[in-house]
Image (cartoon, rainbow, N blue to C red; front, side, top):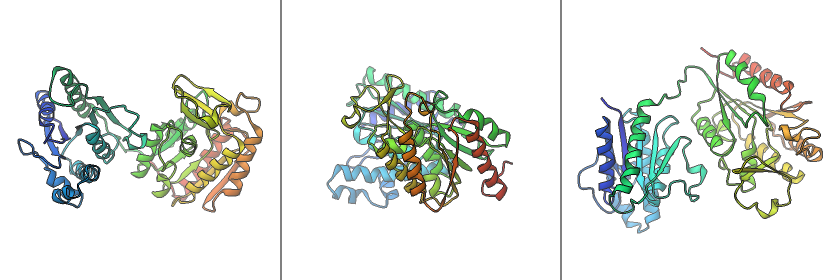
Length: 411
């Protein structure tokens, strides 16, 4: 039996394109399941799951959706149904990968469908608006792949077939090659940036692996945080070391590099033990090639590359960041320890460093002491986050939780 690919789209208007995708997959030895997310029209041939099936999964009917006389409301209802149906079918082992095709309406639905599937399930969206700035990062499942549906808005042609055939081959190839997360060892999720600015993972990862844990380090530049939060929401982590909370500040101050409003909330909601710290807490990342927002144009900044520029928060902004972090941790249902290295949170803010601001750092530390909620244990460390003392403190906390039975033992 070949790998099974679920194809979803509006079969009333895009039957030719969807059928072409299916033919390419079958020609390469794959199998196809089909889901119709149309509202008004009908496919030429019955699909595996009809629009009525999709509407029912959303708790409504096609007649009720049509009666609303609002295309936005209609597509949102179909998106809810498609996402729920796809998630159920995957749990039942019915398919190995998914391919969704659409314009802006279909893409809106596709984002919800893909987000409903676990990390590691191949997810491909063929879209007329692929990579468009209209797609917010928080709508993207962490491992979604997109390809531009070039020249295919209405009808098949050689230009759009080039895109469609690539997508069909890509999702089938991914379904054949994917190595899903093994889950044979307890997983610890860690957030960080590269070794230029944060270094704790170079010590902690091997130390945790020596204890029998698997360690996944997430690059906290928006999409990395989304992947981290998605896995936390699924309960995938035995514990987290959320040491790079910069995405909280990015969202707070309107950066496009956001991991969403629920950053630093999902582990706590699932009761996952959290060790949290201040890696790059003092920076706000902006898209390097965008004009700098007016409030930050005269702010000290570090141009990391042509894609990314980090600006330094003022003392007042750091106080607000501290309060935002504390508010998120206050809702945690599991144990939380906040490690506060009082000498700084990234290599650039060391005393005498290019982004050093001792008064603003002191303001942040003072606000953390004042705002720290009662469910959070605040541990101050007279060191910098890149010093060995920080790594030792983090391991002490985790080892204590392991001894108390709060963190699952390997094996």
